[in-house]
Length: 258
Image 1 (cartoon, one colour):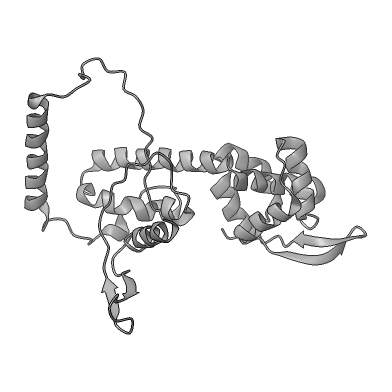
Image 2 (tube, one colour):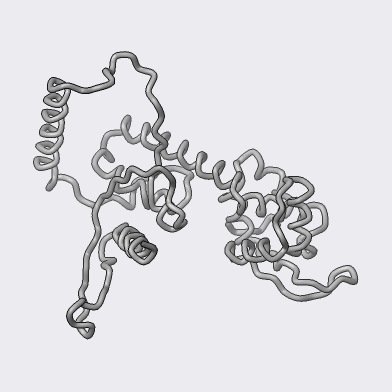
């Protein structure tokens, strides 16, 4: 059910952090508001990633693969089930003993390195329990950096990523003031073999917060992009791997504050 799915997405997005309850009217009394807290850790097993971009950005996603280990039997018997029960009990006991020892004090001082803000927001709660253990923190930071690079690579290959690439290529070739949805669509067709109409490209540019203005350039009137250096620098970092970013640095002024 579409409406039910939307409700679940709303709950999951709101339950990402404290003090963000879901507010609904009571079923038997529409004039009465119900404040429903839904904050807490959640683990999902899905066949596909979430189509909701905001929800997917709030998740640490792992793709499960078939194991090649030969020491794991295809079916687990009572012995394995008993061992897993003992392990769960130990973990629960550690949680109960450590619950009051872990606080949010000092979370602002945890440095997870050069990763995007949303990923830091996701990673910091995981880092709190071992923030005073340098070796564990170093390994976690390496993991977060790898995950960040994987996200950028994934975005790079997405439809939005291809549009961003076409925009920067067009800026180098024709100038920052001569980029239109139709010119980007033409480049996508020529270089990436993507059949995206200019209307679809215009919607993607709008979703990226790129503004357009109707003006005349080289004798042709069209809706051309407004090049905003700070926004474009953010898009470059978000959609381009580090090695590819170097190709477009000349498009930015030296005094740009990113």
